[in-house]
Length: 392
Ligand code: NZQ
Ligand code: ZN
Image (tube, rainbow, N blue to C red; front, top):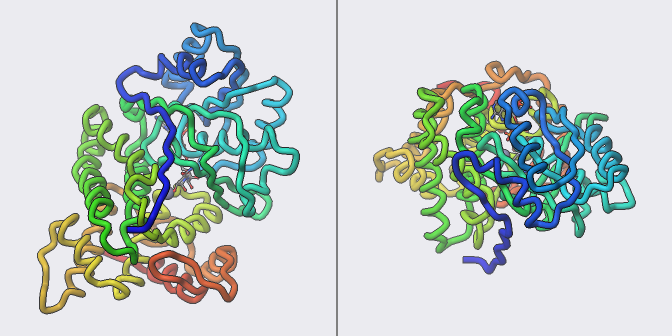
């Protein structure tokens, strides 16, 4: 196992109705003037925003608000948020929503104390200072409620880029699973694909002797296989929602990924799809992740066999392990399809003729990237081609 530091300072406030306590936690972490940041309609429609405001008022916390974060959050709203927060003397950002709202909040949090353009942080600079962020999570998916990451899209050129720093880890995250009961089934499924992808990005590693993180990864994956069909069939199933919500956080705080080399090519390859077509990140991953697996499995057939047998219950073909590896990948793609996700370009709304543009935006030039298998531009193009034509 590799050496590591694991820093996860977020206080997770989990359970029914816990959003009514968010004002208390803002106060606990030093907030006196909050920027309440949220998305389109869902938090307003469900009454969640009113409950959050009531909790802030009850705890004597002043606030201003900025809604309108769209999925695949844009830099343009981040600039507005930074100006508003400065003008209003905001000292705490409260995100009410999913990964997009939380990532936009983190971007504003970095931008407020920074003299330059906040986009610098999405072009390679690491943030050392940020306003504190708290979250009220409404969708189990991106894991941003427990991560130090943020992903923003620059409208000019539709460039989707990420940044990471421990200063971005939320001070607290309220996780009330019943808030996710209003999600449309497609969004629930997209979230499930993202959670599983966060595990796979870590599971496929060249690091040996990582039994504990292997087994934690497998536990999260098996939980998703069991619980996702339950919530798709019965959206109000609190227990299944609760298990999925915690799985989403466990998948991405990095507790399942410490001490091991990680890959992350599927995420990079997907980000170009959600940048170009504005599709849901999880839907893009459903198309890319199995295609990536088909492209790289020969690098370590036995690791794919481990996934196939332990997670998907495939039987081991000792005479031809490749068959087992491929059966596992097939089972993963069938699962994604069974919960209503796209599995190829046509179903996603992507075009095969755009592959050269996608590869160019991915931006490898003559270089290579990835922790499990290092990919060249031509490899990335081939993964897009496999994804474009995939079938069950
Ligand atoms: O805007 P509203 O009306 O709230 O609608 C949202 C949005 O349309 C809706 N929604 C959220 N909660 C709901 C709800 N609808 C009904 N009931 C609820 N309770 O769901 C839609 C998607 O929301 P979004 O926040 O975009 O979803 P998600 O959490 O999947 O976030 C995706 C973003 O996170 C990034 C992705 O790239 C993408 O931009 N990621 C962030 C990561 C991180 N910061 O650590 C890691 C991930 O790998 C990912 O890249
Ligand atoms: Zn993701």
